[in-house]
Image 1 (cartoon, rainbow, N blue to C red):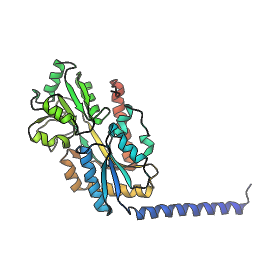
Image 2 (image 1 turned 120 degrees about the vertical axis):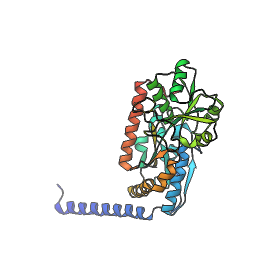
Image 3 (image 1 turned 90 degrees about the vertical axis):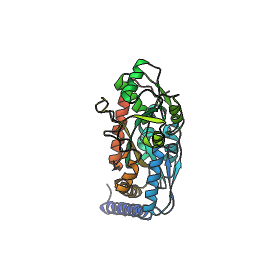
Image 4 (image 1 turned 45 degrees about the horizontal axis):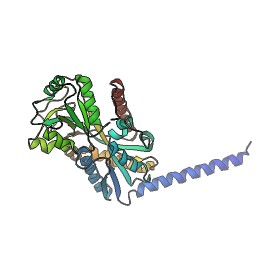
Length: 330
């Protein structure tokens, strides 16, 4: 048995070590950031994710007093960009801006080179954006009901594009197939604003599931038609377009969470500081007004709460994939 004096000495040393660690963490938080921050957007330029990432980076740069540069790293459903962050130094100077797709649904489709649940820290959910279905103005379908009728009349003949297997847009389409009982061919493209748009405009693809940002100008120019939106209420951008709920599909709401992540191991003081700053940005009226233009809505959460929301959304899509026997390995 250890002498009492030795136990007291060990306890004192432990207390000193803990105080030194806490002081170090505090100093790290106070000094951060002291150099430019890189924010990796794991999708192609021009889409909803890219647009949002640049809005977030610009606002964070103003508040932090250092440049925050966005670097696009698309590919493999967002995995390439996310892995670059996972492999980076956990010092708060390399962050990830991502939708739920590559972090929740896409792991069903491929073997992941990392574990999204343990290798990335959720910092802040910045917003939530909802999808819509568009078709060429040459299509006879004027709304989603008419499009479904066309699909039922031609089983397996019509096609719908998305921004990749396992993406939220893909799962949105699978939800429509399950609810409407239709057989339509899925055509996955790489990137949210990639070849799917011109192919849909030309009519080579019958419809596309996407966000507002990539197709807004094409709708305004009269070459694409919006059939329906998947938000709980009508879009402020396209107020004349009905929701899925209005179109006869109760509880059909499909969106995607967008937020900021850091590699696991990033000091908690830095994570908390970023969470405070990002939460204030996401809650601001200015940010809300900017994101509303691309169909996003105000929806803010940080750290553990954000992580719980990711887990819940992931369970919902995984359940759909299992119940409908959806293959995510095309």
